[in-house]
Amino acid sequence: MSTSSYYITTPIFYPNGVPHIGHAYTAIATDVLARFARQDGKDVFFLTGTDEHGQKMQQTAAKEGIAPIELADRNSAVFRRMVEVLGCSNDDFIRTTEERHRISCQELWRRMEANGDIYLDTYGGWYSVRQEAFFDEGETTVGEDGVRREPLGSPVEWVEEESYYFRLSAYEEKLLKLYTDDPEFVAPSERRNEVMSFVKGGLKDLSISRTSFDWGIPVPGNDKHVMYVWVDALTNYITAAGFPDADAARWNYWPALHIIGKDIVRFHAVYWPAFLMSAGVPLPKRVYAHGFLFNKGEKMSKSVGNVVDPFALVEEYGLDQVRYFFMREVPFGNDGSYSHEAIVQRTNADLANGLGNLAQRSLSMIAKNCGGAVPANDDLKAEDEALIASAAKALETAREAMDRQAIHKAVEAIFAIVTEADKYIDTQAPWVLRKTDPARMATVLYTVAETVRRIAILAQPVMPAACARLLDLVAVPEDARAFANLEDRLVPGTELPAPQGVFPRYVDKEQA
Image (cartoon, rainbow, N blue to C red):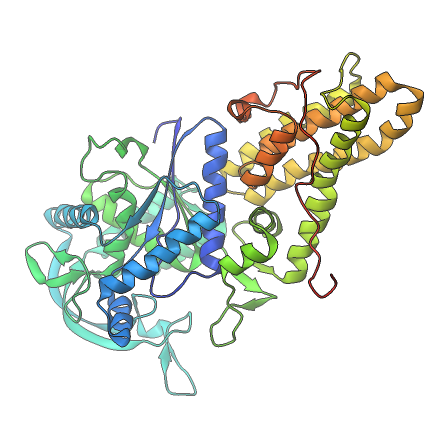
């Protein structure tokens, strides 16, 4: 990946069921990172999609009396709609049932086989259909109900069948060297420590094919076997970049930054780099594993009935409000909790009373006292310039934070300008200056409007629609909204549209 290119991926979502808020959280975060990079002048390729093979899909389809591809078509369409509803700016939506992906997977397999890393044997192990993974007996526990489960709680069953193996054991030292030489390859640090501990515990060869079901990509040369779902799923990241065609237009984007949930870090940070090393393909740039989201402190579960529909969340609170809340409230990389009360608090305090109020009262004063045009800025004082300049410092902080995927820190830095602007306008009191010093009032209002312009430019990756409306209100052309335009200035005398609210207060229906 060149300095100017930026390839970022979500995990591809498993369409065995409908999307939940965990899927939405990953998609929003990845979109914010992608949009930030685009705003900063990078050539971005943002990928998401669905992982449609595997035993779970086949079993669910059989229960419904339909073909697996029908289930995949139906549910993949819902995930595609989810990313659209969330305002995601993905450049591609990949499905693992596509022909381009079969070609890519089979070529990766051939290269690993040619390197001597694939062999045929018989497998026996504890397998979780839900996790699509095998577990050592020591990783499982038998509950009071007599059911054996893996660490995340799904049942496991003993599976014995002929299987192709990948020589994962041969990559133990190479992987440890990777983590040591490139400490940022797996992030945040607690996930890196977890992965290193797993690898230091010893790697066993990995079963990478199945004969007990047939919903998958056939193994080259032996179509009695289909590929293990993680060989299939992980390969999507290079399929979309054009693999195996090194001359493909998108291949220059690889390697990618992978944004994933922490529950699949082992597959992305151990298996995936080992497969790529074996096949002679460059490794990803980084694997960043974020934490879980909890509903009022409780893990989401269908049985508990606290799984949240992302479509309903957006409908209830608004898209920009939901995007802002999750990117500001939860330190990215950590586990986080959300609730109706927390979303309302952020919406009303930070957006309605914060940025929204700052824009509304300053632009309303301009409309009433400055002829509805950008005021004069003939005599900017040190305190005016200091507020305007705070945006450049925030951008510097945000760039550093986004480079390490600390999205919450970037948002925090941007919204600190709102706090400073509120203090400034209260101190300067333009409503008093209107009577005592109209020229100074105009300068103060210019300063606030210019600050709103800069905040809106910086906050676009998080709240694209709302910030577009703010930039419309200060008459910023669409081709002047990149970070490169941050140091531009509003031109005095430019006619402004009538001011209007951008962030309404949330009022509970019962209270209303």
